[in-house]
Amino acid sequence: MNSRLNCRLVICRLRFLGHDLIFVSTKPAAGQLAEFEADLTRHLAGRAAERLIFGDISSRSGGPASSDLAEATRLALHIDARLGLGSEGPIWRGRDLDAYLDDDPENAARVRARLMEAEQRAMVILEQNRNLLVAMAETLNERGILEELEAWLGKVAPEG
Image 1 (spheres, one colour):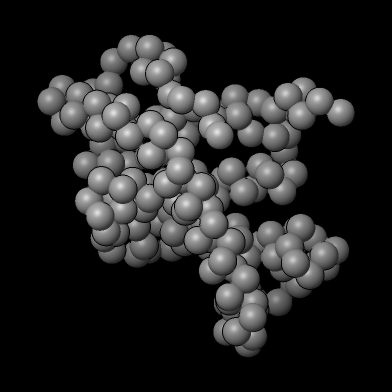
Image 2 (cartoon, rainbow, N blue to C red; image 1 turned 90 degrees about the vertical axis):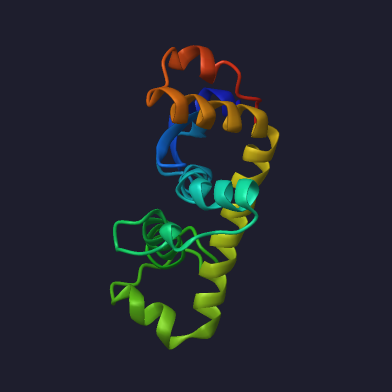
């Protein structure tokens, strides 16, 4: 089957220098592992942008339960323990997911590795679009708004 038929266009939001930047990507149809991996990458794009532009990350990438890092961690946990798409195969664990991490260091290592891979994917995409990222951030910083969004999005280099 042609994977292009299973894709849909997604606009990804990235917080940078106090502003939202938007990138476009294609994602597989709902419920596939590749879609969840793309979501993890999107959640960790702000963290990757900080590392790329500033050379390090700040505590803003973590924090409250509503943070992108918390959302990514929950999603990685669900992939591994509830969706049947993780290393344990077709299994659903109904127990507390914090305990899933706390009770077995291997579980925590798998989830951490999945998050680190997603952040690396985000870094690659942002590196490919670094000039655009900086231009968008500068424009937002100067104007407080990013007009003609479609024109900006048309400049995003294709993934890969």
